[in-house]
Length: 314
Image (cartoon, rainbow, N blue to C red; front, side):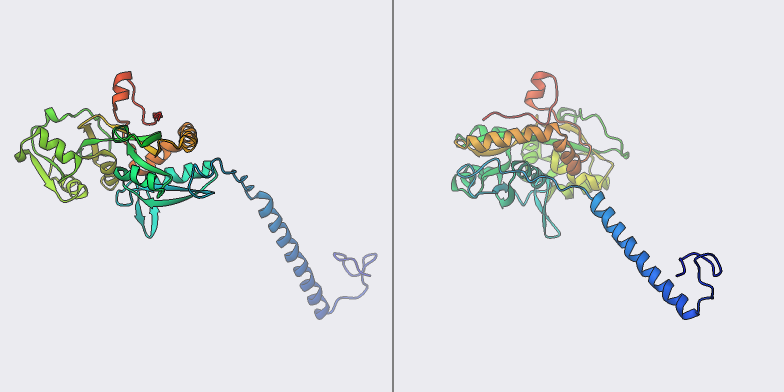
């Protein structure tokens, strides 16, 4: 028998030349063997190099701390980007992301329900939601039925300018130093702050904050007052617009649960602290509001430092 690779006439080789049909048959068989071997190797390398599946986190809370076993129902305001909204049919926003990260760490599936922060107490008492996002610290302090399970970002009204440059500015501008008129969304918190400090001639009301920022970008206005996180989110489309100062001290936005639900409150607080320590909260803040400077709060003013992740005890 001829050994593959030996020329005719070599020891152990064939003494006659192969016919064309024999050669073609052998080559075809060899190709089939090589292809099969390569397929096995590739399949093995894919399965061997693939990332190992992460172990499933066992649920850390169960009923009655949550309404449905295995599910965390979270209230978010779906009408308020960048906190929550719809993007091509999918729920998206800062609160959506924070809630998803929380549920994941708690070993739960997340379900979102449309709840305004001002309706948190009602929704929680009715069992519509297990927890509600973006509840301001001051609002929650006035409602005895609520307990804050930890804050994750600060917010408040601020002043924005167009600098003609993408470089950020020191946010030190105050309303006292403003000489011209200020554009703002009519009926917003910033609008009423301006009404209490300026005459009506110095206020330029707009239908929306985006419309005011577009006018600022076009050079039609010199200054815009608005919700800082919302304005920073809109300003991602206008890289020369920057936060110039705060109208008031910012306050923490927190996750609220019912006052008696200490089990869920403690679990959320623990995981929020872990998300902050791991840099997840900061990463989500950058995702939605860019390189917005840290905001000054009452707590940071008292301590002389600025922090956006201060845990709020119930």
